[in-house]
Image (cartoon, rainbow, N blue to C red; front, top):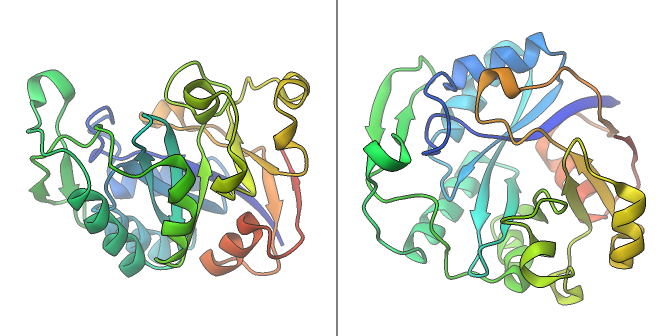
Length: 244
């Protein structure tokens, strides 16, 4: 089953996310763009995932609950989960292992939690862009404990990427998937980082604004259209066809 995807999206909970990125808006924009499967991956929090998954169920689009974790090395890693409950439990773990720096909305932006009707139900007072006390090498195994999968985000970027922070993807990290940007030069990356050979290389938008959400393009062929099947594919547990 060919699934057009975007597995790295931010909502109004991320301090750098636009306030128009509500659960309803981002789900329905993805539908207008021809997506079949998306993931909500706010910085260091999963508090808007429940609403986005509910909207997705109503709209007929698969929404994967997730997070963009900032590791102790200040590298970003996308974490996706089979269930909202697993995502929220991981979110609580990350909060316990993150610095308690108060958010300053006038500098960093608001961090708004919304329900499936886009009503505000809370605000996160702790700044969500700090580095958690979780290393790149440990995150994949940790996320598995919450029935999820992890992969390094935007590895070709000059900031907040595993390659920029560490120079290479450590083998002990046990990643089977990595993310590149739309402009990622795959041949160059494979030449400088041979550890990427054989990995599934996703291409996601990392959109923080509705206008940054692209039309469909990259796809992955899954046996079933659900979070469990996607996570198995990204772990390398089942063979899949894919195209950027």
